[in-house]
Image 1 (cartoon, one colour):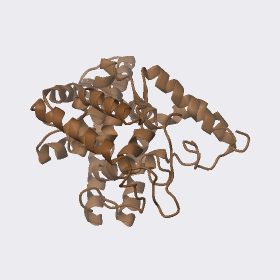
Image 2 (cartoon, rainbow, N blue to C red):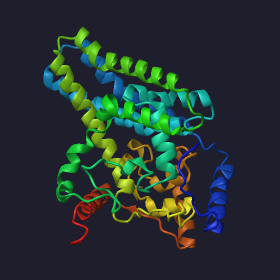
Image 3 (cartoon, one colour):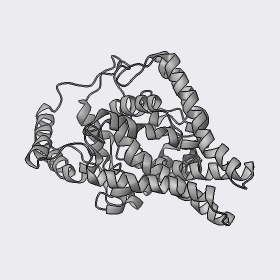
Image 4 (tube, rainbow, N blue to C red):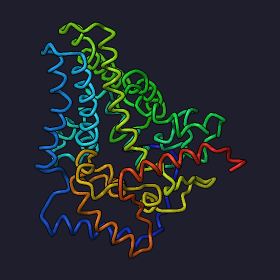
Length: 365
């Protein structure tokens, strides 16, 4: 793994780090369980792929009313988000299985969700997980000029309305993956020689990107036009609705974990040094929500346990509800923060309040 020059404090909170690692490792050892996925994850995988693919095949094979097709298209979008959060995410973190090839296979499900493995692993595993909420390094904070997530981003007059219009932009996340983002990221990441695991040959990455995009658009656009009575513009609308549904779900879940008032957005000093250690940095920049809601836990793939995920990205989300008790107790003992919202509603309100605050003119605020 290779990236920029930001360096975390290696001396900060050593006792906390040792204690927490020891307790979590003992949990798995004492209960004789592996840190990777289990039958619960495998069952969830079948459900999520069914949500994604079953409606698609119904649209291709059944002559049904357009309203039903629209409803099925929305369901496909829900399935896209579900596969992304539960299957693809664990696979590309190497936590789905103990077998490398299974992790790669499950991680490759991103190709039918409009994304690219190389780009996603660099942006998520390297930039986001290493430099969480650090402006200029964590690309999850980069929304161009249209949204202002950090005090380190230049304020513009239209930002005072961002808590109103942001929700309409969130749905474009995966749609942008499909059309532009992957090409832009591949060019930038290869130029900067960023990688997770091993830097791919540029020619190989571009070929993989071109071939997988061709297959992707063949599945979701060409086949529906060729095999059904739908017109091209009806398929285009369905394609957009599918992506908008998935993008809206994914964006909201992502924002609740990091873009709220409780989270810090620190910057390194002039020499690139951070005040805190990497693990403690995660506590100050990450927030949980709805940890006691079984439905949210199940559907979001543990992304509502964002504190546990950021501290232990090498552990499958299936185990987060259990180790969260350990993490929370240990942070309390060492007087460190453990940010959480009891409900999704409270987290959503907090996010849009934060957007409203960031939208104010800094000079007047």
